[in-house]
Amino acid sequence: MTAQDDDAQAPASETPIQRALRLKQAIINARPKPPRGGRFQREQAASIAAGKSKPWMSR
Image (cartoon, rainbow, N blue to C red; front, side, top):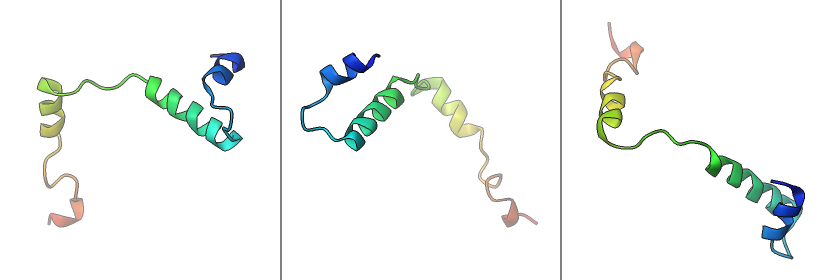
């Protein structure tokens, strides 16, 4: 994206802070997302045992 592309999408009354936030959100939304649902989600949920996240709870 160039500065001209950014300006074409921006409203006329946008402040510099609003522009920075809009650009930051666009970058975040453009990142690849991990797969959702199915086997991947089950494996992720099963990988953390209940007691492992609280080591101080075990003797």
